Length: 380
Ligand code: ADP
Ligand code: MG
Image 1 (cartoon, rainbow, N blue to C red):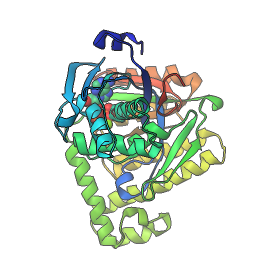
Image 2: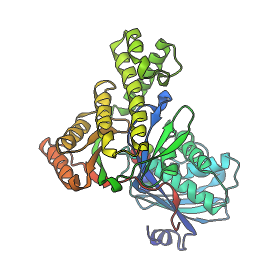
Image 3: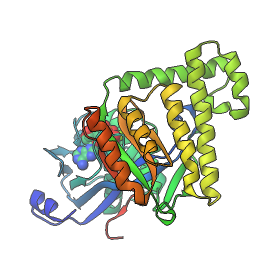
């Protein structure tokens, strides 16, 4: 982002800027609320937050992507007190204050390149960029874990969206040419090599533009079904069933719906661990392709969270030579990913665009990526 947006908004230069990325989940879907595993990577797209301090207890915030700028006194901040996009920004200031930090006041301009509402986590990119910039501006000395907590509290407690820590962890901790393995029980994380460039590969991100209304209600249903299956099996969480215990567990579940839900979670955790093993063994990343496709099939047939657009993106990519492809994110719309040779990027993109046109669906937004860097100060 140029300095112009900040100058234009406030008539003075910014003191510093932070960038934080959106993320894509390579594998491990709907596993977070089952104490399971996930493997996100940072997008080369993100949000940049430029800041300068004020000493009058006021926050002014504006976005290059949104016309509604806000001016609010910090003393008045309480969960939900600012609605709309700026809630994510002032929520971070609120969370720092809740953590015991003095907040003197500041001007902020944000500028983002993550598609909004496509399941690529523009919200975490926004929160984490603001958290990094504010921490730096006031010299708060936050650890990465502190930044994740503050960003997550902004989303969960200030804006009021009940999400897990996957998005903020990925946005803060990811690195170039790596994915981030997350164990949601211990909240331990580990970086896993994912050098697509070195292997002549790209990850295609296919934002289907579909946003199906049932997403929120179905998400709550899946959570309840997983909790019920665990209860019937006498384990704290479905995480506690491993691949070896799957057959026995399935026999004990008489409800076919709960059986399918449990099978997805158990096999998805196993696929995520297997993906990590392949990548840490420094094998060819193409070898994870079959695991990605198996994840999609499981999400489609057992967990029943895919949709026509996601299935079409995946099947078309596979038919055009992708090594693997899957829906990513919660489902019912949003984005799919496909692992492709870099030489096939255009052919797969064209084929997916063609298939959507033929099906008379809105044209998807498609870009090729490799894992990018997590949150950082812009001049570093
Ligand atoms: P996702 O995180 O999947 O993109 P969410 O609904 O969680 O979708 O978050 C999207 C919200 O984040 C937007 O509605 C907006 O309030 C906020 N947001 C994200 N990026 C920006 C931006 N560049 N400028 C203003 N608001 C943004
Ligand atoms: Mg989000």
